[in-house]
Amino acid sequence: MSAFLDLHRPGDPFVMPNPWDAGSARILVSLGARALATTSSGFAATLGRPDGGVTRDEAIAHAATIAAAVDVPVSADLENCFADDPAGVAETVRLAKEAGLAGCSVEDWSGSAIYDLELAVERVAAAVEAAGEDFVVTARAENLLRDRGLDDAITRLQRFQEAGAPVLFAPGAATEEQITAVIGAVDRPVNVLAFPDSPPVPRLAELGVARVSTGGALAFAAYSALVESGRELLGSGTYGYWALAGAGRAVVADAFAPRGEPTP
Image (cartoon, rainbow, N blue to C red; front, side, top):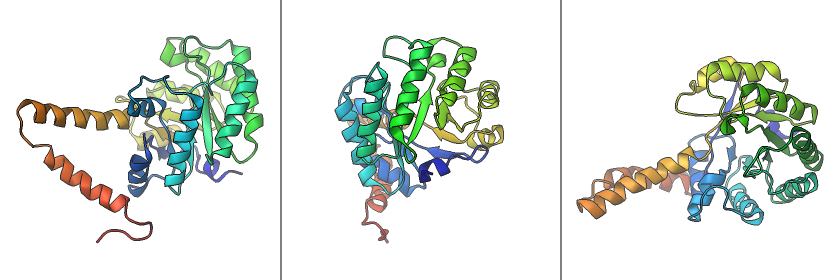
């Protein structure tokens, strides 16, 4: 069984932050992250593009760079696996495995529409078959992000479970009631995407969650700090951002020290 899958214990969730480059990945690991996942929106932003504006080759190369930079499992946000058909999904999963990743997600959203249920199930089944035993597929039902409702999301997760998906995910399930409904309807570990109104991690543990991710939020929080600092510099011409810069420099110096040799 995959060491990454072993981390998924319902009721004892691990937090899986989403870095946007190798540096942010190493910082998060230095802070205690036991596994990481890439973020499609955060990575696209580093290229000056909107979410959905990255190619398969770019996404996998980016994820491989992050995986090579850290000593913890890395799962890739590969959107819809860059394919509508099951064969294309399977090829993307094979490429992700070859890149040294521990897992990846497969969405049921094409970029413009939710896939028909039967096609969505076939796509998950193809991903699972290509993954084998040592690569963790997270099957995502995007309904709640697309105004399709919780009941339909649960139906899809149940079918994805039947198709063999080892981890299930309905991004947008944020309230205790929604999360409890999802967990009670399936028999696989469930990932929850942290939103501003989501219960804190200790409460998510009590609800039976197995994994908590952040999506692009950390990347955009970092961009927010950049915007505030840039506005100060280009507006008032003052340098108050040095307070944040000094703290950040210290964290970076420690995180980027040769492995096994923390800074004094």
